[in-house]
Length: 148
Image (cartoon, rainbow, N blue to C red; front, side, top):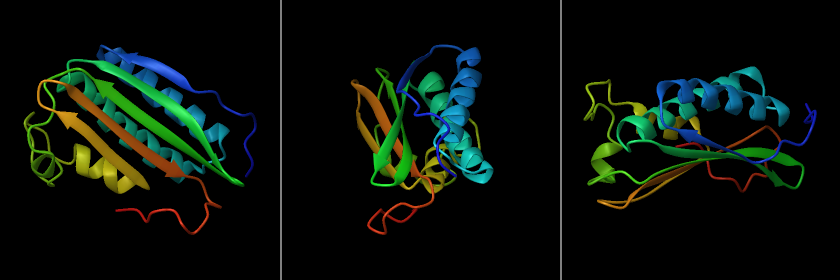
């Protein structure tokens, strides 16, 4: 499927629970516009929902940038979540399935990573956190990283 219209980069504030729904809606629309199938859209929205909630709950709020990517004929979507909260003290531990500081299932960061093709965390205690996640629609060159 080819994109119906080229989506633009969108930046959204994440400061309340209402914003979480708006982030999910905008990610789904951007993914659909880029030609992602329904299953891929659902994976993107699920990852975005987890990362947006972390931005709000653990980072004290922040923003997301939803950006279309193009690599030859392939289309992708980059989600960049940024906050100026306390940062993550131990990224390895935070990425461990079952680890939680918020009483949840502990699958937020690690689960989001599994749903995406590329995933990185830039954090420092006291400075905040930036999580960047990328998914590619079908037709991506074989050189892309495999899902983790």
